[in-house]
Image (cartoon, helix red, strand yellow):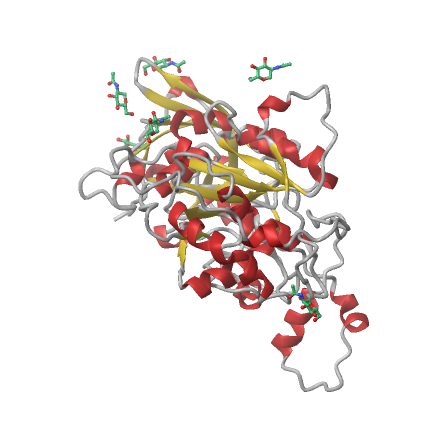
Length: 493
Ligand SMILES: *[C@@H]1O[C@H](CO)[C@@H](O)[C@H](O)[C@H]1NC(C)=O
Ligand SMILES: *[C@@H]1O[C@H](CO)[C@@H](O)[C@H](O)[C@H]1NC(C)=O
Ligand SMILES: *[C@@H]1O[C@H](CO)[C@@H](O)[C@H](O)[C@H]1NC(C)=O
Ligand SMILES: *[C@@H]1O[C@H](CO)[C@@H](O)[C@H](O)[C@H]1NC(C)=O
Ligand SMILES: *[C@@H]1O[C@H](CO)[C@@H](O)[C@H](O)[C@H]1NC(C)=O
Ligand SMILES: *[C@@H]1O[C@H](CO)[C@@H](O)[C@H](O)[C@H]1NC(C)=O
């Protein structure tokens, strides 16, 4: 739900400070508060002119609680989640396609919260999307942030408005944007770890250090998805409207939520699979070396390049469907192994891509995302990420050969999944190392047993092993991915 930083050129036209003695960082961050985004801003809605209906926000009748705490006989499943998706009529026509990618109308509950009604396209099947709700009037709330938009208040209140619907058997409210794609199986896996009867506020930070300085490291970024336990939502609903009044100067919806969480005293529970993706460029580096945590969400999909090359954004995301169905827990999980005879280092991001590097690199290098992406603050360099990264400017021989997912299926004979990855044709720089060249490998085939319980255990990277080259399958590298054997580690000697 964060906007883009404004171009640095606009800095001086917007901000006229009398003194030059402002610290450099401060100057930078102020410039980024200035947003000029018209088309990236998802929630440009005009201030509503309806008469103020303020009282109703405060005097919601609280009848008997439809969700009394129960003994936990059943593990949390998808039916216990109520989604609240922030959308605007302006962008709905385009953004609804992201929601269709993950929404399962027969299994999921929740709503798309709009600023005003949208025309439904008779050609598109609306039963494939969550039902609409029009957000309550927020014109009685003051919004004084000069850079953001009043709609932030509307979006912040989605959790309270969802709560007031009084739906039954709810354990979690999960908020997201209309350009958020959830891997819902993994969302459920994460939420299963937490007791919804307690107060939990779960999500992720921004990838950008400066963004977290400006907003907060204590804040769950809305676009990456925010999970709020039922009990916390209940407590929040009672105070959110008055709380929002105390922070008219905040920018967004998620910093308003965080302000209220701080008043309640609930910290952010950070989960590494929630991705705000405050970056530009290619997500490749991030998805090829994902943290050892279930992949829960992807965001800013209109901002970054399609996740597979030579495809549009929606089709690229659709490509993840097959591996997600086969083994959602393993999606984009990295494993690292060596082809000792050919001196190659291989990194598998299961269901997404495989990289072959010439030479032997250690696991601690390979687990760092390659900086194929740019900082949200375009002038900030790699020191402004919240995690370690590796440079893409490497020796010509150390540029990886990249293979993207092309096929995924289940082999009944072996009871394993097979995923295939084909070489992405790019001109590789001249390399003068005298060693086997991966350019002859056109396809990588990965065998893996699906492992729905991967995340029931302590986190550990899977291991991979390279099969001996098969003369009948020239040009194909065959790899097995799975739970590490006893004492198996990523090493050469
Ligand atoms: C989810 O759990 C509920 C119990 O709260 C159970 O009735 C339902 O069958 C479960 N649904 C699925 C899809 O497992
Ligand atoms: C819309 O999708 C639902 C669920 O898949 C299906 O049952 C229904 O037949 C579809 N309607 C149309 C008009 O395609
Ligand atoms: C909004 O701001 C105005 C001017 O500062 C103030 O008079 C009014 O009480 C505020 N309204 C609310 C609901 O806080
Ligand atoms: C499934 O596995 C068997 C045994 O390894 C193999 O012979 C067969 O070709 C595989 N099927 C497919 C479709 O790859
Ligand atoms: C197939 O593999 C899954 C784990 O991936 C396992 O749970 C299941 O028991 C296996 N089925 C057979 C018939 O071996
Ligand atoms: C590497 O070479 C050895 C000896 O020739 C052979 O036994 C082994 O299978 C080879 N391993 C791979 C992965 O090619």
